[in-house]
Length: 596
Image 1 (spheres, rainbow, N blue to C red):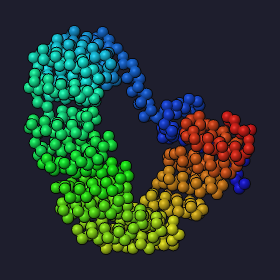
Image 2 (cartoon, helix red, strand yellow; image 1 turned 135 degrees about the vertical axis):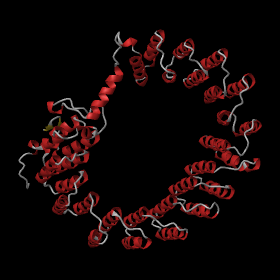
Image 3 (tube, rainbow, N blue to C red; image 1 turned 60 degrees about the vertical axis):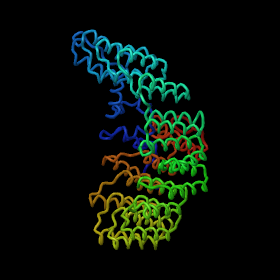
Image 4 (tube, rainbow, N blue to C red; image 1 turned 120 degrees about the vertical axis):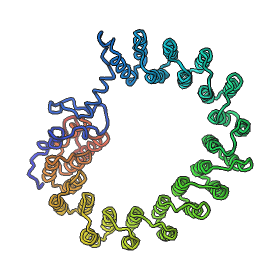
């Protein structure tokens, strides 16, 4: 074996050098995989931790045990207020309530904002008595108003205490505050979530009769959603008629939101036929359908695989809609392309331009072009680009880069070069990403000489500087051909041109060296990487470990795997795979600390 390393076990701890290196950030290594046990517990050299980890521990200790106020601080209003804010932020609402009571006894009740925050926090406590005790405290100090009671009722409903919410409603009325629609909506919402439609209707009628509080569209949204589940879609029209009697006319913007929520709930219950029928009945009532309703229904039909029904929805959508926004077009085109309905997606774009007078959307066209390229339909891509140009929309560099990448991926080298040459004709100069894609694609398809010419053109004709991504691409292409020495020369050129190599650069060369069983050079390169401050990642360890196994350093790898497993640097599954590989190569039994 061509190496001066007599025993890999004596040098394998170099791999753990990042954990001892004084300028190295330990958190980047120890955070993979994320685990609470990733903090090293052995070896005194691993005593220090990262700044982020230390800050997390400090925050946990701060929230775990806040220091008690001294006798002098109990009379300091500012310190009491700060302590109160800390308790609220740490979620210690019961302790916060005790402190608030002591502050009130000394006449130091804080501002209303902190009381509101505490009231919201107490809604998470199972016992509603604590919430009422805070309201009683505010009443004793004369701080109560309708917002306090509205918040109290909302918090109680959120916590599921419906009976206590009605008690709070009576308390509010007895203090001379007339409730508005906000507490009604809070109670109606929780009742509808429990599917207690009759109780919700009785609550609405109670507010209408006793407090002269007319329901708004939020109230009706909750009632309709509950009615769809409990009584079916037939009950929806009853509430829509009642909304009209309450003054919510068809031209109200909220009606469109209402229709979309109805369609959404019907689709959620898989009642697609009822949803489609509801949309078709809307024009008969003078309530024109909204694009969001059609998009929601179309999405469900596509998920269920009902392409015929989806086609009918698209036809009705294009025929009946009076307006279409660009966001709706993008969502629909993306959805259709995802499910392979490229013809309908193209039709959506054309109708949006012809009927709705929308400008051609670059994002929608880009999504469709990518879908065409995935299907290797270059002819349709050319047609769509011609359509874009005829409407004074010229493709940008991102679209050209995607086209070149897809063409190279499918082996169309000639077409990719043609697209590359036409970019400048349309005023779109190629950038580094353009050259990276075409050079990598040509090299992968066997056109190595042409790829080298493109690299020369990149520097000489377009005067583009090679960045680290381009250098990494070159080294990746060379490494795949086993040209490791050439990769090292490229890295030397990077240093000459003052381009810093990153972890991808080192991993690429390390992979080539390990495949060639040049472990001594790999170890020296690893040391050089650490000295230059480049942090290794989990792939670095995997590459060198695999190379060490192939080179036959079984015992050293065994010791190193045990140490890496202890420090949670590599995943359990990958370490298991490496151990299985060792057992396969040695036919020996694995023990902790080595192979015997």
